[in-house]
Length: 334
Ligand SMILES: *Cc1c(COP(=O)(O)O)cnc(C)c1O
Image (cartoon, rainbow, N blue to C red; front, top):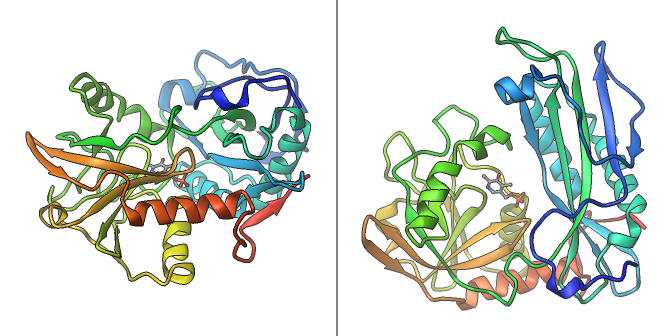
């Protein structure tokens, strides 16, 4: 283990010793390897640089009390990345090889895995991009699949701070577009609205469905959940990214906490009647939202209310081994 101040880690990039690299050339993936080099050298005309042919994933490995290291539901990330690749006209990196790359990347960076009880974890960032030099618009023929590891702390240093969101006038994902996959381009185009939200004192944008601007979708990088009393209400739409955290929280609410869960379209108009709101994703698990601001009209929620708290403690408990994990949720790596 490294001599590091694990408790003060934020959510930022620290290069670690090894990353996994596989190359796709002449229609096939090579054997893959661990590399000590954190840099990527590309043609100035590489497809990813000119036309953003790229997607990514994000998942975490955790130290358990008995010293083993587990990864949380990496099979779902493997499957989602395969979906992203198909939609982005990129070759799928086989799901079993994805899991093997997770194991190898975590094991090779063992000394960077934060200790049990620190609240920190080893974040894995798998990603793929087209490297073929081109000017005409078409898919690359050569690709890199890479996976690096970086130790991260809890998303918010210094405890949970309920967020303030604002309704964005810009859209995140077009109907029948790429909102349901983890394409890098979805993030590139959210940066303008994010910078504007920050300048106005908000933490994030809440996006509505672009076609009618009446239903709640999600934020730039997290799914949104609501509670009404002890009912959990989860927006559904074809352009919401299928968050692993959200699917796990919904399972936990239904099967472990015996809560009523409604997964359906949620109109912005009915949100005012809800008691709690939270954002969920791998980086932060679930964090409370105190306010959604709709063009100057504030909709307020209980800060860190009982439903969000129960969901957060349940999922963190499963990830750290304090609560029993549903079958297949934890992959033991080392
Ligand atoms: C990655 C992502 C999430 C969170 O997904 P997890 O699998 O829970 O990390 C939510 N929304 C968007 C747009 C994302 O890209």
